[in-house]
Image 1 (cartoon, rainbow, N blue to C red):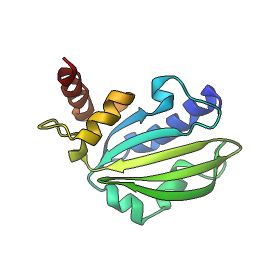
Image 2: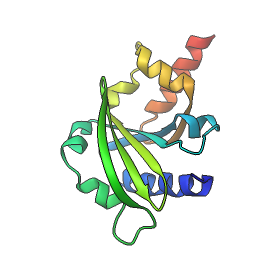
Image 3: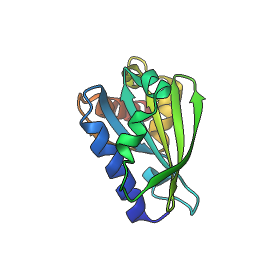
Length: 147
């Protein structure tokens, strides 16, 4: 996937998410955040919402992001669970894959930072928006752990 496509997809998700009162933060993680994606890399986005489970139960939010007439359209989706985080893997046309992972806001707790959370932040973590400063505090806490 090209960098311009990645930027467009991240922008579409961010435009949708930032307007939702329940979505408090969003970050880019994984290979695109590290700056070393390969041809088949998906776009990994983490969204914090205390209504995270509602997004798993319903699908209309997908059509709000990838609405009719959008450059990217959904070909298929598949869900996966990672402990307290769940994600929807989305295959898009004309090209691209995205993984939208949802977690409750408590995922970003800093007292203490959970090992799985710490691993994600240490690996690659780029804050897209952070309405309450939770992700910024989390990044600071993980950096303190490294000292």
